[in-house]
Length: 408
Image 1 (cartoon, rainbow, N blue to C red):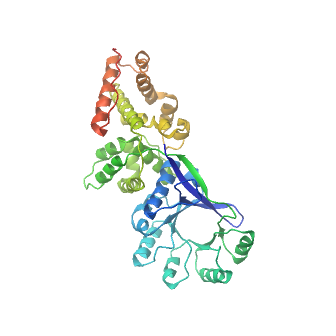
Image 2: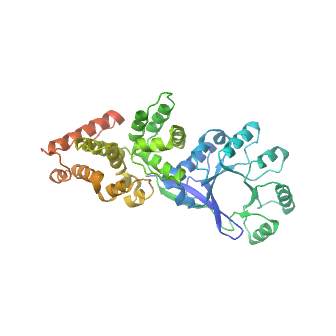
């Protein structure tokens, strides 16, 4: 399975405590990256940071600085990011024309913080300073008279100045004496790669979801169905809620509930990011999750349990340890789930847990044991499995194994 990789480089205060981290695209363990599409690189960083690894795991409670080139900035992708966690860093390649300034004013109005990377002290770029909270000035290779002229000009504005590419002890002392507020560079710390195994995702469900969201008369049932068909989409939606909506004092009980909490507009942005960044898929494990989820739901219906969609979600998420190759306890800690889901996924306890235990036991062909967890006739359990397989085939078009049968 491919890895999820994001590189981070700390930004320090004058007392050498960490203020934030600049998040950088990486395609290997090397200390640099090569890419031809800046938008795709930014999308990959956002998807990896918010949906696969998690902002808390990468930057803890510090600020995350993410680079934006023009195309990505002018789209609505910025709004997928939490205003209280992320600084939008505008690359030096972005020309501050009227459209860019208007867009930045809009983002500032929504509460986003703006940083200017490697500020160019030219008249055309001065309008950016009216909107900037931070300005990075690279000190490596620059002559100090030029740096001091920049600092003198920047002192007239409210933006805090970051000393970038600080590489020697002498530069540290010069930067402190010159009045820089923050410091970043190889002298303090080289970029550090943060990696986890990548959660597979099929691009087709994301594309389907994206097209569905553009329907003017979309129904919540359609949205729920589109997301629920793919375990990766479901997982990433839950991770998105946990990362982008920090402080949300709500517990998610179903995909429908998650979709309502996030809202159509944010899910449209989220799906666009997933499509743009691109993923691989592990169809066999995902198919197992879909069949298991549907069987859990059908068993819950047979038992006349309320909210059977909660049982579907538990079954769907139960394959994440196999997909991510991580302990389920670690995965559950990253998701905004209620204690009932925690008990079900970790220990197969509680009403949801007993149904999940029945389904897992049935999968292992231990039919006599499976029927002990729920009050259903063995042939009823058989039927729920068969219906789950048929449903999986009709929904995602995958080939599954022949149904086991307790009557063999």
